[in-house]
Length: 116
Image (cartoon, rainbow, N blue to C red):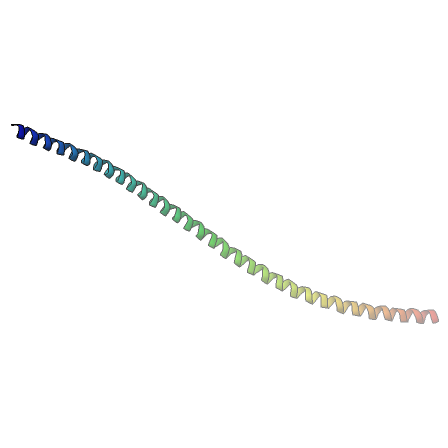
């Protein structure tokens, strides 16, 4: 009977150790599942942020293309204005030359009138 009692006590002790180990394992599994859920949530948040960043990047690319087009248009307009300014400066030079000729002609007329 004593041997049976000792065997039962020993078996009961092993069961308690097993239950404690099982309880610890269950806690560890719960912690791992919680950690996994947190990681999944983090991955989802990261993917959403990445999508948002991609959208923002695409919007910036569209703005950049628009700005580049506008810049090219302004540069072309500026070049056209510079050509027009060159033409007008040439015309001003021509008119100044004609004015000098006219002034010289008027001086000749005035000198002639004074002599007459």
